[in-house]
View (cartoon, rainbow, N blue to C red):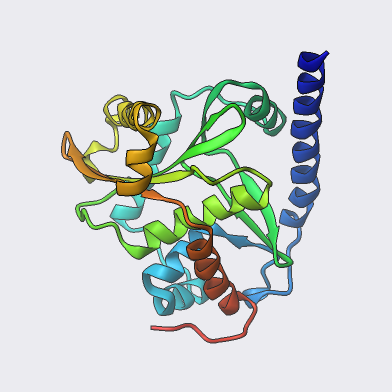
Length: 251
């Protein structure tokens, strides 16, 4: 009886989340909204750009610029990372989150309404164990090895989105992986890294949570940090003040 009840609860949970995501998807179809530039929702990628250089982001949003070579390389790198992954629907994704013992989920869309502001993100990679998110990844392709505040802000906001969706994020870690631009096609080499971090998490979760990781593997820099709700809320509240027109863009 207990097993049947557990299975029934899992079925209820994933269907409930899936239906909620479907209802929020309707917002994405709106052409105009109440926020700055008349947008109807905020993208996590735009929030990250605010942390990198908000004044520049504000200007480029008003006057979109052509794609740079580094932007193109980054896009190619992400495409190569996910092209070998099995494509699944939104419904299948939510079902697998709640019914799989272990799940690696790449570029899966998340939509939440945070303080009445719709936010959409698509994490590069999430790892779930028995319905709990434990690792959140962001891949960067750049000649610079620094973990900029914008990288951390992006992952913190994505972690907060998981919390807002009702997930237990008390043991969630986020991982920034910075690879040289020329490695954009080396998806097999890069795909090994999440598995290595996952094994470290399983072997010694407490050590990772308390000390994190800063290391280099095959010329790829890896930063592992613990997710903190308070820091994520501070980041998101600061960013949303701009979209709500409570302040102008800051230097």
